[in-house]
Length: 309
Image 1 (cartoon, rainbow, N blue to C red):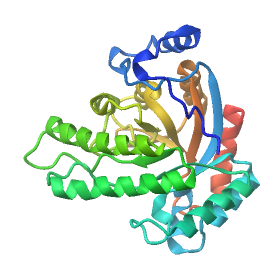
Image 2 (cartoon, helix red, strand yellow):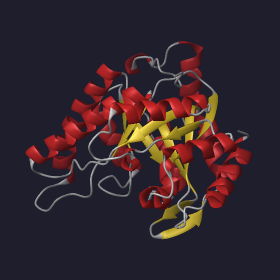
Image 3 (cartoon, helix red, strand yellow):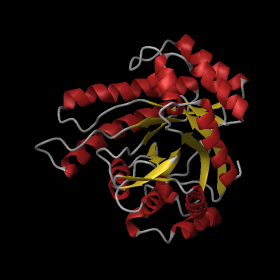
């Protein structure tokens, strides 16, 4: 399966040639904290492909009234290019499914013209007990292998719930970076990028996310830019800071300023992406409590129209 920009230029050689200069110029207006060596290096310009995050059908998938075959069929009918086949909905999770299941899903997606744009597992690297965190490191490694078998270019992970009592943010960041670096190194050996999704959890601000990315310091690690989970201050300013680090997205129906939700301004979001450039999948996650196909299709149509996809 062809993946977007599967060959990445080494990070430290980012500003080389006219393409690199064009991207650098596009990002010059970003705050200094957002201009670091850990930015994703890619050719200049835009190349967006619409994708669906399976969490959009969380209710039906958990209830067993839908399965991944149904989600693939929905993507095919809607003309959606990719599917983030989240691991939570595979049989036996968090244990990895049998190869027969993985390969069948891979075949079903392929013959329907749907790329597996990514998958995801849930972890918590904020826990102080190193032995417990080690089990999560092994979990991520196991799901890296699933991603490889699926042909998924990226595995989505999380940071963790919060700073535990008796510890500081900096302490947790240090051990978390070591754990994630081990996962990213393993991902590199299997051709799978590892990407953290900030989820208004341990990571609450763009600057905190950037600190983690720089601390891990691996070309096999980046950010899933979840626009609905940056809730400190102006969400669009926070999104803009993270655009140079994004290797995939979670485009949601709402953004937040503190606890106040507001409908996403897709035109403004597109302008931010246009400004700094992005090549790859743009996964959409509709969070309607009913997870109805009509509601998901409606939001996908809005994204498609605004982004001309």
